[in-house]
Image (cartoon, rainbow, N blue to C red; front, side):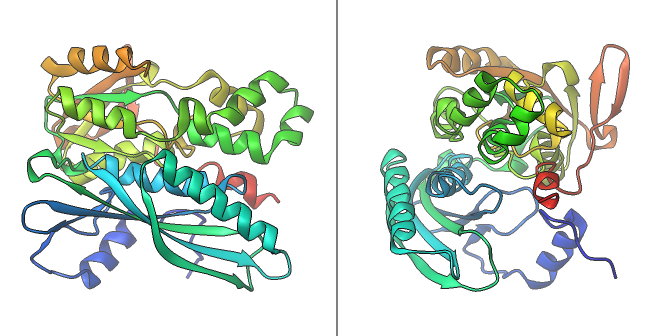
Length: 339
């Protein structure tokens, strides 16, 4: 039996194990499902929203990554992140007191910036790893009439994307592979800009998630992470039981992201893309959302439409049409497999 590749489990395997082992607690409104970003638990007058995500590719500013990506999974539920728990695994023989203090300072800064409280977790020095790892759990809450799920996409909706892709991937490549990029002729200015993507425009989608939910009847939101925008679109379609028709040339690929991916041989559509919010909503409300985002200096793009499931998930450009690629693992994993 072959070993699995780096990255998310294959969707069919994940569906099989979840179907066999996930609880049927009646208070769990949305549990562990492929494509859904966070669990929803009924607390009576409101919902508790719970998400968990590790940081596995980045080694720089781990605390910021961990808080931001976990907060994103709460925000795409239409919810407010409130409480964060962090499990820190630190490499044996490479960790000193200064390392611990720096990581906790990063977590504290990130929690303050996202208005969440660090309430627990676990920290240990352990064997078998070569760099610090953080696995985060974020808890939030949402009023019952404001809940949004990935599965809510409806045929006829427009598909929108904020900012551009691969925002997080570009930041990681620039931070982790700077010397290689310079050696391959990437301008230092491009690398500096991409390094700054972590905070500007930032890998958080909290501002735009709040805006779009305030001004429109958003049917679905999803946080593109491992596998990039392509995997996120496939996950959204699978969760909602729909097809998608995506205009290839309307997918906003950041110039710096395109340049860095080209330099190291990655496809931007399959590269980790936190920071770009994916959503669907009625076409009559798209203008309201684009205007509201523009007022907040957040780029918004209509990239396609939701279609019946039998039409599949396709890319179109003029008269051409072809299946949206499926990435078995995130493109960025290729860089770390080489080291």
